[in-house]
Image 1 (tube, helix red, strand yellow):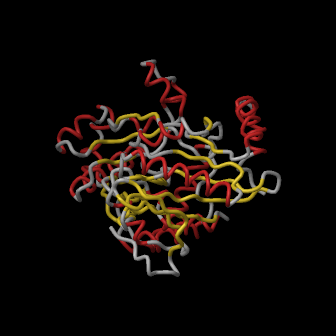
Image 2 (cartoon, helix red, strand yellow; image 1 turned 90 degrees about the vertical axis):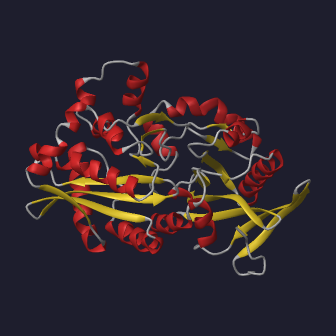
Image 3 (tube, one colour; image 1 turned 45 degrees about the vertical axis):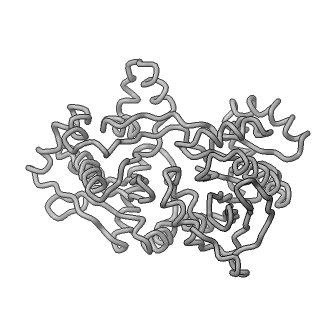
Length: 383
């Protein structure tokens, strides 16, 4: 994949070095929409939609600004990263680099250049704290970061360190049999009772949003996103390349539950869910998940990512402990019943370019992290 270096309005050269394999160059993207970067992400196994320029444009509604840097080797795109930034009156500029950098190379010269550029970007742009969570499947970049002045991250407001992934490369029968018996036995009865699943469109976003709000209220959690305009903007951007779908379960023509699925690379991300609360005994939500798995497999996706579960549940499962009755009633426990692998992800890293502040962070942040009020007050609370 090539970058047209003649597009002066789209790219600015930041730095370049000569390596045994050719010239390695860092480019700053000057426009918010970057289909070249998004297409590159879609072609890699390390991609996540959090790194797309589409996502950055949606997060702009929440006050986040974006900064995309691409890397070329002899004009061939080999990777990049996207940082979202936001200023806090009492801290200065904070940066988030979630699920990146995405580098399609294990060449040490490339990795070292990427890390050096990360540091330079933080310093030049006065990003006081740059929080990074590497891609789920990338170990190389994590190892490099831990060896280059990147501290352990103690800020988990924007970091999700667990997920559940269903392997769709198996046969449909194998996927079905991996679902817990209590769920599996309710799929065919749901169909017999008249529950069905279909795809929705932009006109159904209001319905989904209302269901999501109702679901969050029942779970006593804050809705995210909290504004329906976020979803409309996301739909407009992601639907251009067919990267978003809305699936809905119905009973007798009445919409019962909905799921927004984001598609990128080899993964279908089951991103947000909403349920009216009706017809529980007809199991519309179980059927909804199953039909999404089947659709994703049929359309060539290798994995279904069910998104984060509670760390407490992940810890219990990894220790082989019996799950408490309280946890067994949660949405997190509902998700693990579909037979996916529970993955513990890294908490990520923080780069603080000021060495004195970095020292203070390493000394005091573990304590601050243990006091939820202090953590919310200091980082990522609303202005």
